Length: 92
Image (cartoon, one colour):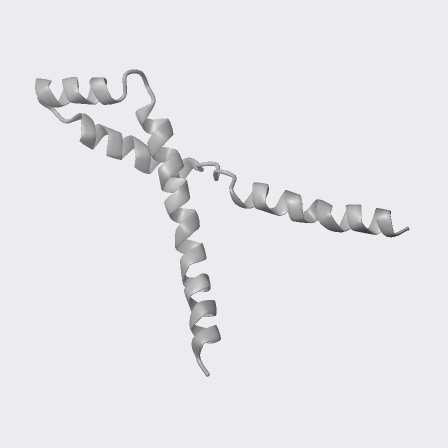
């Protein structure tokens, strides 16, 4: 009986860190913001087009920037809550 309890007790501890570290999936707003950011990076001159194609060889700019946007959005919601908890713990 004790072995079953120990095994089931440790299973959620192994699952939680992997879920917390997962990349967020970008939504339509993140993709839209990434598209405009990539257009800005691409620029209008031949030099900026060349540097853009060197940096993002294929169509990877929007995908990369969309994931970054989703991570920024996710951290924006987490950061104030964490800092509030830290301040509450430090206050005597």
